[in-house]
Image 1: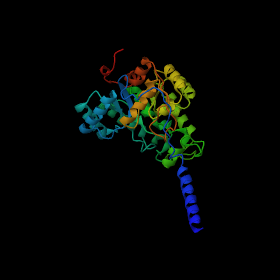
Image 2 (image 1 turned 90 degrees about the vertical axis):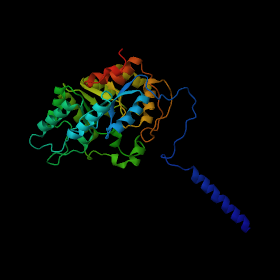
Image 3 (image 1 turned 180 degrees about the vertical axis):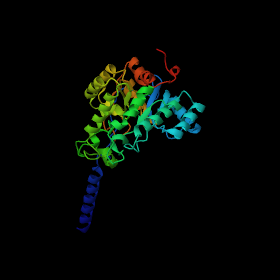
Image 4 (image 1 turned 120 degrees about the horizontal axis):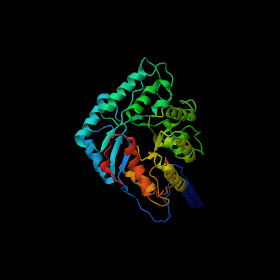
Length: 363
């Protein structure tokens, strides 16, 4: 009887362990697809491209040599480094580019928003920007800190359409250089963190990204500030980073492009939104082919093939590279060659001054 009880207890314990082993959270569940379809990874873009959204802190000769090797493997013609800085820091990067690869890299300047509200801040910031552009910067990059974190001299949040910033936007229009601006973050970061939120896993693993209507303001308010600023400065060319966080609502994005002719969009970090709506996204790219630019954001060469495959192929149901960004599969848009050329390099050549067009096909 005792042996029977021990055996029964052991069986019960094994059953419990077996059941426990089958339990898992959403974070762990990541099944491999059993679907068998044609298609393969594209490791080199069909046409040379300009990455208009990259961030490189170090641009000395050694760093540039490493970057060039990866760029050549990917078929990247020109990298636009948005983390140029200002003043002496910017000048060092420009000088290193000139000495090593003068036609393969460009930098955008950045504005220091500390001091907004002090006497003459706008004119001083615009004057420094002009110095930076004349030193060799090809545009201005605005980080999401504007609208989210920057405060003026009185401790109030600096809105993107704050009139005290107008001299900066006007100066870019005067000098003929574009402004690439990242405003806010995905709308899901403001939504309740529950089972309905597509970015739940990202917010769980990166809780500092969670926002609310009071931290620091409603998403709709920040985005509206950006659009009002674009409209207020029609002579300045704006590149709205991350497709203005409307890649999941291309109908709305199309309305905005129709309303704001000086606004363009970059696809950096939102390829997963495009890859889950291939027919809708292809129609959007064909309609707004002159307004869309290629960009990647984080410099991870191993992630570029997903961008190429979404844009170039007609492949079905292939994986994305970050589960916390997208737990769904990707589909190719199969864009026509002329549209690809515009997205990859023609639109950037038109918007950013003095790029070496000889690196790209003439037709």
